[in-house]
Image 1 (cartoon, one colour):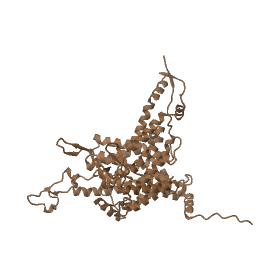
Image 2 (cartoon, helix red, strand yellow):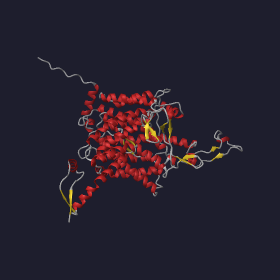
Image 3 (tube, rainbow, N blue to C red):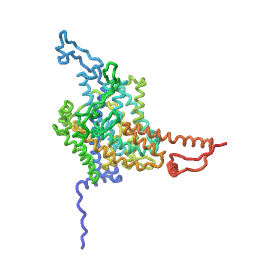
Image 4 (cartoon, rainbow, N blue to C red):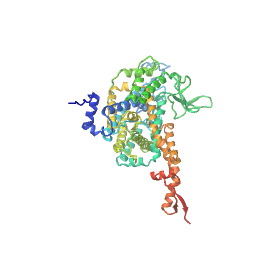
Length: 577
């Protein structure tokens, strides 16, 4: 009797994946149907979170620049001689200075600075909470591998344009939150009634296709910069961008200034100083740049060899090396800011409750034009930006059908709209689907378990914020660049031989990184598409009402294909006599 060979025993992970796939959880999230596994989803969620963890510190830092609810009332009286304590401020040479509006600006009043520190910690928790809620809704109801967090474009608009640096803008922080809250409710309504999906379908096909590649370029551009990436690209006063990569000691801030007739120079009204973006010397000599390049090589090699977890390996390696102090690549230099960051890092576990930003909404300026200008801007940016990101990520994951629809899109639209409302109540700017979700998709994430894994990490972030807020920018830059490489494959679907398709696609693709806005890229692409097709649409209208009659057929193969797609109707015309 011949015995059949026994199959090799399954290892633990194989048994775990098989058990979960056949369980109610696996069937609910369609693991087998989407050709994924439980451990793949966990790995994808980990990669997504590590790539976007920088938002915890960055978003709080940007929004804290607005001053939050802090005001002149938080400033404390000081002695005219700052070296003398207020209690000893006596004598003919000393006097007590009562705070005024100038206390919010350099040199910042100690009381105002203390309030800002509370706001920053509040905003870290607000970022975590709003992101957590958004990811849970996205994962549990939409079953999509997309993570949500406060958007990097809208938070800067909120902080520096609407509220202004330390409240120097037209709208107070509390009123700006009210604008975001109302905008979120409107956004939620148009998502609930299905109008948002109809708006999204109005986006022309070449713009939809190219937006994915445009977002890829946008991601790569972010990854190449200093604030959220390697620092390889820097500012140039003549060409706007140039080769950077200089150490922090050789970087300088840039600010708009006005030169007076007497030769004095002052900051332009409403202007703010940028971060350290200008390399004056020592280009390509930054140690952190080269460490980031090592991380880039690690991830790239793993991608070439198809090694799972490529993004995670690169991020963890660069971050681990950067956490050692007294090195040239440390994330904690021997400066006041570095020492403060290291002290926070050493806490490892830190639980902070929101004190002053939660429920800080104020509707006192609802009758002002500036209020509605901000509200409308937030609304159209969210409609274009978040919707474009959702469709691009769904396309990148292979979820979209021929009509551009994808499974779970209704709850996907609802999730970010609900998160915007929640975020405004906690004190943060609008929440959006994060383009860093493409990192997890690249790792194989195909179900809502990826988003729920990210939500789990955000929950842990309530306790381990000091560690997660210490992931340096040069560890995040390499995966962003390589995800951009992966997203560029969408350009092969553009009909480059048909200029009516190619030009709007290119405008969309190029404007997203160069205007630092997904919304502006979509506006440019849609506007160009309309201009190039308005003649055909007018002609069809005239034909419809028999002002002119049609004769002939489409004149070339590209137009025939466009007719089949329903994009244009090319006709030869005879005028009626």
